[in-house]
Image 1 (spheres, one colour):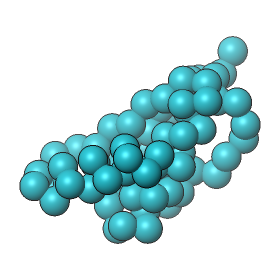
Image 2 (tube, rainbow, N blue to C red; image 1 turned 90 degrees about the vertical axis):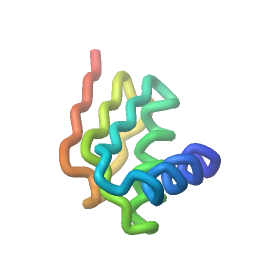
Image 3 (cartoon, rainbow, N blue to C red; image 1 turned 180 degrees about the vertical axis):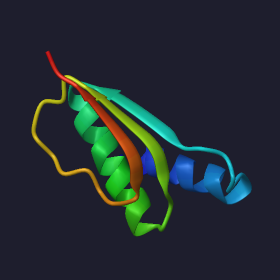
Length: 72
């Protein structure tokens, strides 16, 4: 999650008006929630978080404007 977070922070610093959308499946879904938490600590908003078949239940941080959870 740290490497992805650093990439997004660098991108956001260059393009602050572009939307940030993060998507993850299974264990990756839980990792993307961690990324969203890290971005929250950095003060960066996430416009959309999409999780598909997340492995564990997690709380979405407040910097996420819209969250979509797909679970079968």
